[in-house]
Image (cartoon, each protein chain N blue to C red):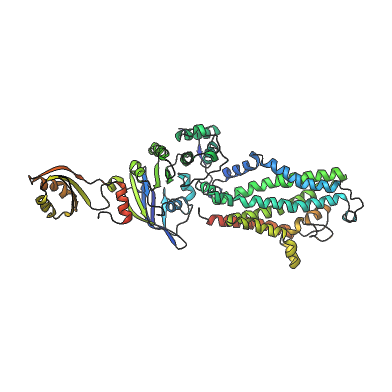
Length: 273
Length: 320
């Protein structure tokens, strides 16, 4: 049998127990397979495909285009609006299976029979997926959109505000991913893990109609067109265009994200396997 | 027994799921380097006990320590020294056996990758999976999964190996293989395993606990249990000839509590239940041999089969 002398026991204790190994595995699921490539292709086909269709469409005499301030602004608005809906849908689908599938298949019980903390189990999924979402779904697509808009219209938006807008988009996507993950950890219902986040994503127009002040504490105004006053604007677009916007929805969404992680950890800690 | 010799100790350990009591006030001790068979019918509370010991479930009442660590507050430290095979183990189906063991090993060790690989290869060799090491688990048979289960449970060379029904789903050959692996491991570790296959327990265990309806009904070294240690002592005799007078003499002894006779052909079999083993061993045979009309063909202390003891304890009719 192999010698024990060279191998050293893992020393991480408390909530960190098992985190590095779990995190490596979650990262491998993103980057060690073709998952990242598939994600990149899918999101590019959807988001950049739609953006290209709009940018190349013969819309020069369209009144809406004139109102929006030109083809580049319209491209910006289309990208953030579409990304603000499509990426959360993808994130919800990813989030709902993260914990629930492992609970149902029995792999969670297997992992937790090793020197692993339950906090580490949840956080490894959160951090690895947050990195994957940032790089593939937000930064890559954001860069492609930026390049396409600049190439087609000849107008390049200022970089820093654009990166800030991508940050807003990222917070928006994370909100739905973590909400779905929270339900995936807190319940055994796939319906809840998908249905509730989807209802929040798509039901905002109805809710905002009844209580418009909710825009200040929910992520709906971050990327959805027409939620920041003015024609078609959203917080992300306003940030790029130098328009005024409220920071409260950004702060509130970040706080929601923290709350979702805390609830997921709390509930997972109470589960029995 | 010195405290440090105890690997597992539970005190009044209880678990209730809603209105169902799965475990009632379990007091159990498992000493170092034993192969401890944890017996009981389905639903007796064996798996519940194991999950409590590992921190996968929380007790409703009572307490337990494994290696002196509290199962509620220090369960990561416990799992660092334990290998566990679940009753129905599940792994990532897309991974190969080698990847699964490598992943498992990294929960316990850091060090040069080649040393981890050497550990993985040794373990695959131990359970006879080396040739299938790089195939995805989804194509594995039940026996291969169980061997992988034992491999992942012992990749860290645990001080305590907990196996939940390790041979339950296996064919006779698979069972034999698993028992052989357990016997190979016994010199390195304490093995605590649950089962309802009594022949396996009798073959490999040195200590046995029997659980029924969530309650411990017996815990003893297997030799003691098989010798009737949990009930009255019985001596068996096979006699030829007229036994009536000898029977009267024996029944008259104050240390004889019962005598059952069975006659077949010209032979009479006695089962003599006694309350004083020393007196019985000194006097019983002499009392019978004093009668010249009787020939003693066999004499000895009754050896129970584990099944007999188990059914007696579980059904509450032991010694009747």
